[in-house]
Image 1: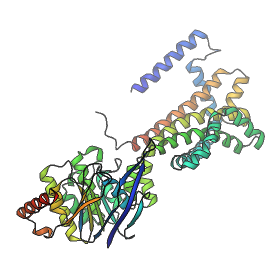
Image 2: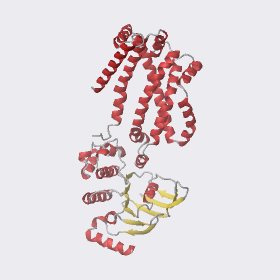
Image 3: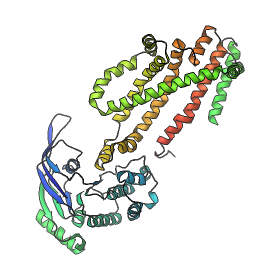
Image 4: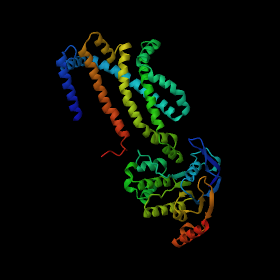
Length: 233
Length: 245
């Protein structure tokens, strides 16, 4: 499977009547098994781009080719859980085919066992984010979109979840699109990094990471970071 | 317990007032109770109460289901809102009496005319409430359902309906009280049975104990329905909300 994004522009009409350019021409493609990372300043139009790729926004110029049968798992910036359904129901409603074994495993990994029957209003933001991750994983997605999934989690948990994301990505041929502010997350998870400009967003640089994910130790990561710092400056 | 106390207070005030103004204008609670028992043992009370309840149930169901559907549509589709809005304003401001009289003139003094007239009176408020509810739906959850490719019905049931539940409950509660009031007028004007009909008879005879016996029994039934049906529904719909400590 392959995701092809060829957006030639997106403008937005403000309430005052002016038109604002949100996205400049952007073109990239993503293969199964690949993790693409979008890195850019706040408000550069990343979320708009994600909405277009997910088919939530049709009002743009250009083309997005997404295999129609591709199952989509998404972690939104805010958890977007159904407050009136329990944690387990939230996951099951998005992923009706999930088996009990798979669900138990996800809840164990994400340390949600004790919260299965809780309502989202009873969870901390960190827990709610983990439920959102469980929901996206439970779908067994072909296209996984993560919009800053590790924000507001403590370092230890963020690290574990990052490993889980890496495991999932390795276990299935999934196209992953990650939006993050953290260069560290980007280097640890990404295969190709797309650096975006301030609004209207365009791709400033596309940096492939040659070393396979599982071979990236702390030394390699530091080296990649240093290399990037040299390139960008 | 507190509710019972409040009810007892009501009885006390009533009794004192009855003693003050005299039995002809305001009969005392035992006098009214006596009429209630007499009417109940003859079976008339249940007959009239049953007839009224059946009309309420039919008209209420009709108005709620139709009103909810139209309100949802108007909240979702701009064109429907534009087209429907003038009608809605007209219906909202149409006096109940006009609707009832016109229905009886056009459709005859029939059961269908009565029920349609009552339903038409409740319809616009149901529409307005549900339209507000639909406008307040959380778009971000709609997007979530769409991204996860939830089938339409599942999304409606689990994403939309729970958000509308408080509006439906509010509409049911205000609707029930509205329908109660209007059903009696419709019965008074053109039905040969029901609580409204009996109240009409009592009015012609200036029979206050009878009037109170019927209207209070009726009020008691309303209270029971509110307690046993509307409130549990509301509690269930709201059980996910963290309770105030």
